[in-house]
Image 1: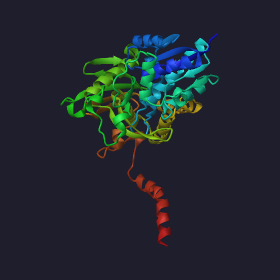
Image 2 (image 1 turned 30 degrees about the vertical axis):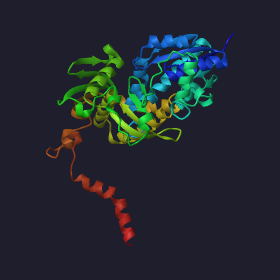
Image 3 (image 1 turned 45 degrees about the vertical axis):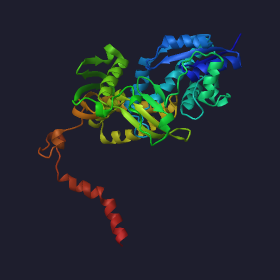
Image 4 (image 1 turned 90 degrees about the horizontal axis):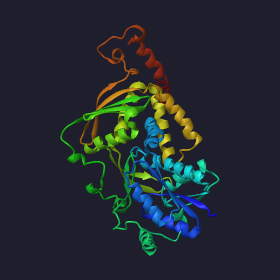
Length: 409
């Protein structure tokens, strides 16, 4: 009986050539696993392509709602942003794709897993750490690290030689990766830091310069850190009735037409190489902004400040592919505890790439008008006597006063 290899398959040049190469080199049955995380591809066409290249069997798995519920909402609750700009669009999809590959492998009793990530990037780590955590007894094959092909031109020649049915066209001036949460662009002309991205590259957003000359209002309702409803000028969409996928798609559309959600960053890859990434993430940008505004309102100071440290750690963890680890599970418990009272409404206005708060509302709001106001006197249990500040300042400043006296001596 032939051995089986389960390949994370996208249908592009890389994974199509890899599928053929694996079958030829290892004389195994290749099972292609295609995971829909919102990349809006023709999955039937991709399935047929895999079969033509030589796949014994093809799985097409719709994982969009799972992606939203178990992955996107977790990074949102964590406020996880890598190096201040990157909203983890590709990073957070990889563990889910890997999980589906493992599920297929176990169902098919396959002991070998393969992926198409290169030896220079982050995705090889993300796929393989997930594989090791979920299926430690499986063997992993990463063709880009071991085969004789060294360039895209050589891949194209390989595809032509073996009549692999992939659309081989003039090379794009960049590479891209899309899912429900974002689209990324890197490589090619973007590797020269002097080059501004071409406007025709962007697929989700218009340039802020070309966005409408009018404000668009949107309201987002959260329950325990999760967006459960959005109210737009076109209607209402709630999580229970329409699902998380629909909510994100609507926000991508609204944010995109208002020029919201672009970023350009020179980031630190896990392998130690600096690389430039250009990203479009309209829905992610809006939801992160609104969620953080609600946390400003509902979290006490010390929890809020400590959670900022956790957010950075969580972002690094996701970026580095450490999703299926005890550390991530432990951090989730802390984050979920902080989200217990992150419930309320944030109303925003979008205008030419900008997001501005219109109003904030929560039954758990820690903002107290009497305490905050310079024009009112607090009463009852919240009574605040300004005279009390003198003793507080004396104690708070004592260490600095002592230090100053000693230095002067």
